[in-house]
Image (cartoon, rainbow, N blue to C red):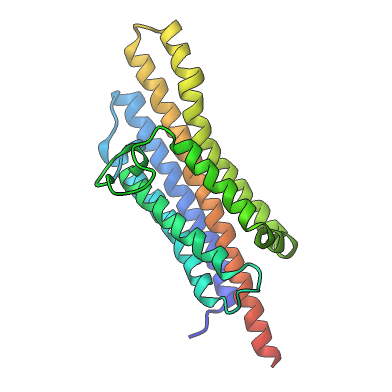
Length: 237
């Protein structure tokens, strides 16, 4: 069975648009509970694990991981760019990040005592190192993508920046700026402090989800272009 490139290109924006609408709805429900009832609805807890937001985010990461794994099996030559190793390594790492999102392995959640990068205060540094290491090690692969699919690379990088700002930037902002300010100016306003923290959580998690969705969008568009190229090559034979 051959996928129709035109049908695939039409379907992808609807899928991505649906994901983004779902993410916005989650934020509205989450903040609605915070502002109206001063509580977090557990199924929509954006800072919990095995909740609707964490399951959605994990599903997005898992989709990217599956696409990368599929590209690994479809890559026939180790000399081609992007190389099979490029797809396989990122697929494995993304699968780990999927598990991390589900049970918060980096915070020591779930049955994570046997997993790497679990329960450590250095998780931001470790993940940052992995991102930089992949960029350096697979520089030629990213270079090939840049020359062949520049718009998609820009879209993917934009998503990565949003995800990093959400995952790392918001956490750093919390510990270095927000918490000291709240302790100084609102030391006894526990409710206000809690509401501000929930708004920060919503901002952090939404940026992560939106960034990952944009990465998924770029990856799916890349796959659609590859299928279209193969389809045109097939028709030209």
